[in-house]
Image 1 (cartoon, rainbow, N blue to C red):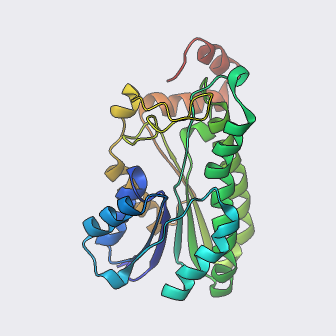
Image 2: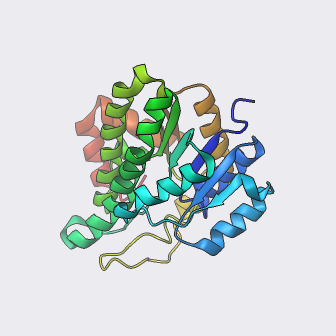
Length: 265
């Protein structure tokens, strides 16, 4: 089995795509490092993985606290000796027009969505380069390829991920390191409820498009397939979102005119 006994570190593992990834990797016989802010939720996910205690490390972590990441990485290496697959999945959204958007919210979004993952990548990359093997998986978004209104910082953070990890992929290709960008569309997670308002507080409100989105278990299964096939990027989205990405690339002026009339796809 491709994944058996590999060490997989997943951030945002307490819910949504991260939780589904934990279960998918557990079924493949991996050793898991589960990180998120809520210890009790991580314990719940660990129990549901139904694997031996020695194969799972619960590692509570706020990825926005980038100064703590080297110490957390040391705990992982002390326990398992290596990281074969890093999944940068932790994410945060918001629902605010640019005119109402505070810099504080922009910093919060970028610290979670971009800088946290970059810090984790920097923490595991030296050992991966030394071992000449490793996979870095980044859960980006279709909004790293196009934009919608009222999510400017989220859009920008996902565009930043695309630029950073596309560059990393080029730099480490000859060193045996693989970089996979995953670009989901609407997925049934708590991302909408946890989105920040202009005051930086969770809106605690569901979004119909999210509620009717892809099953996170499907997304997790597709991610594992993409890792095994050494894919560079996958887009997991419906026809409308895929069409919008294509339109943005081929006819950006037309895309802009259409999107000015719509709040979201």
